Image 1: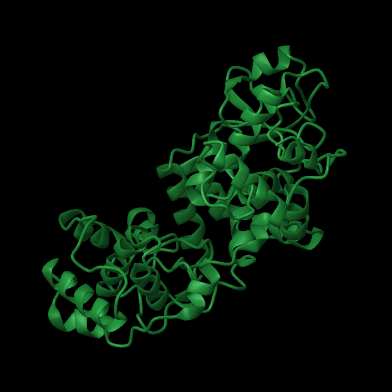
Image 2: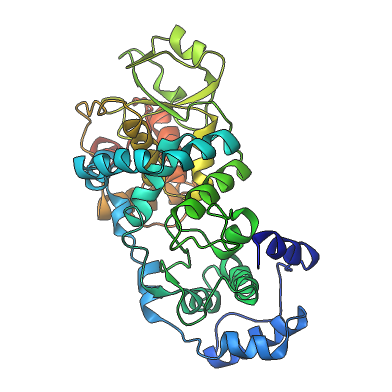
Length: 391
């Protein structure tokens, strides 16, 4: 019986170097040969390597998906309403009851509240009903060959090879997301090796077919990333109109009790006392407002999109009984081409906003807030037409 423990031991005895001799770009067939050579240099059997890479192909659909993630240009309210429905909320609560024993074990052993994994499970694969139909090896090899982020994906190819060696990966049959994630909660091969849990006791970690394996593995990964047991992650709050808006955003952390002294009040329950927290205003001072606690930052280790992370964290609260957030009356924000124009102007002023892509990420938010302060505008990090005109 091949257990994950054996897989982990094999990896521990044979570390993957971060830099190899297979170079991105050029002919894909040459890249495959170089990857095969690198695999053999790591000690893998030649016959195993040949079988693993025998049918690998470049997939142009993967590259198109990588470059067209327009959904993240939506504002938080629009994005959350697209992802969260009553049907999805009801399914989450139904699955909480159906897999109650697994969630009890997850909360006991890893300290991760069930709403958190139920939200990821819902958003990533609609509770396992659609896990992606991209050939995983082809996706990983395509993204490794592409020169945009090869250092992220090359190690995943060798992690997949390790899983294949132990019978838990098929180079021709394993499918998943375009970026190489596998299973009900979408984990990369190296994450499976590092954090996979054989939840159903069959000797394998099969995230595509076993809810127990998928949920417990996801929880262990969050724990590994720094999740703090028994602590909240996000809390909706009501903010006074007179607040110093420059203190909002993830760059500033104050004790929840200090926020309370400034008039920030919980919409339900109590603030988390001495825990550090950041005030998040995803659509500015007139829109929804949340306090983000340390666990919220762990979400960014799972996904880098601010809007996705906030929506997942909020949905976890909803699953566990929180009310729908107060949308407020936010000013109309910039989107698409207008936001790109703003990003370009900010870049010309010396700010690092990352890629000019029309997505309101952390870099753009920080730059907007700084410029708002300099211009004497409410520094709530929400880009508006007024700000663009002033620039």
